[in-house]
Length: 346
Image 1: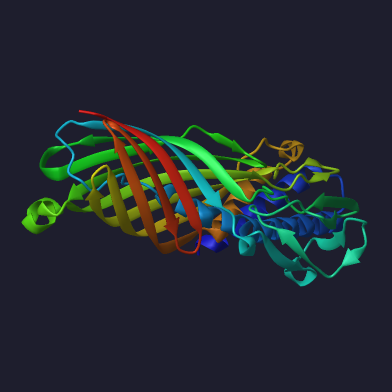
Image 2 (image 1 turned 30 degrees about the vertical axis):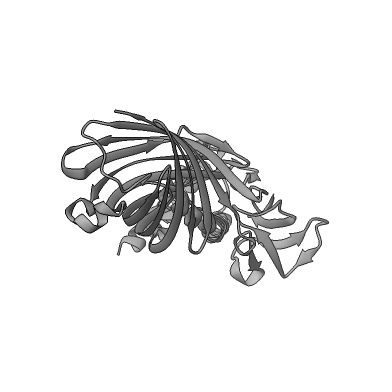
């Protein structure tokens, strides 16, 4: 019912604005309406295939290195850490296959304008595109490159994290990054978590300097990329940038062993992520005729999804008085590494 309502709203708005502002005949209006509807369907299809690898990868980035140590913190002790995250882009997620049979409005051409029936095009994590998408709204031709990827082997970004020791082995923490500019896009993450130490209840674990803790966390991530810069006789369509919003709830269990200045930790992480998308760039000139971005954002709800992930993490921490140096690597479908410099205020 909800999808039918969205479709009815989009088609009604399109029809109303075209009838009001156009001097074309009814048959021309109907064709223009169908063409724009098909174009939007193609844009949603492409955005799903293009953007999904990046939002899947974002889950690994926001889930990594939440817990610096499962040890019990002193009451009111505060730790501030600066993190550098490095996500390694896998080859399998850099491209996806597309063919004319997948599309209702566009057809494919190579970089020399030769018609082709299928092509391998970049995802948001992929290289530069060499495939054109061509179509026609009424008698107005449309031509645009399929969107480029970031064209990088790895993605890096910095963020800050802080934690505060509370009563009975409990600790609260938060992380935040300013909006980081990536090649062809932007990235931001923030969230909070709570940890409770369990090894404090077991004498054997305490005696052998083995630390065990559970953590629950929640984070939000925004990741945006340049998308389809479509110019038409009606003006730019305003699909130049698309943003994915990832909300992740996480449960983590970590165990560590202390060796003098070193602490080695292993963790198991499971999380549930909700993915939503919207067109977020400047509105195009076509907004003087129809509210196209609003219509596209309604249609993008069709590709909203929820996913559950499980991953492992290995970490090593080295102490120099109140200063700590830590590196970690999370692994599963993707591989994500993290390095941090921490200072404990007791």
